[in-house]
Image (cartoon, rainbow, N blue to C red; front, side, top):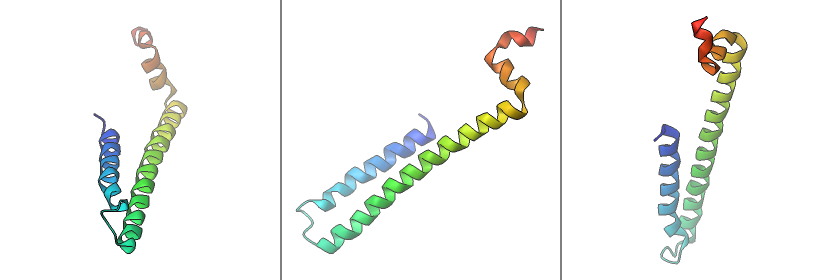
Length: 83
């Protein structure tokens, strides 16, 4: 598995474990409020990391094609190496 896949699975698992705090097993509303902020923080952490990875690799691919066009053409068409 990819590192980002493992990270996504771990954050979703943590969010599932935290969902018990919103049930009637936790009668304290202040703890529910605090766990809610942790839950929101996990959502934004997951979202930020995924968007960062998406933008990083997108910009990396664009820069690679722009500044090194021969390398990107060779990877798209391996027959160019024979010439």
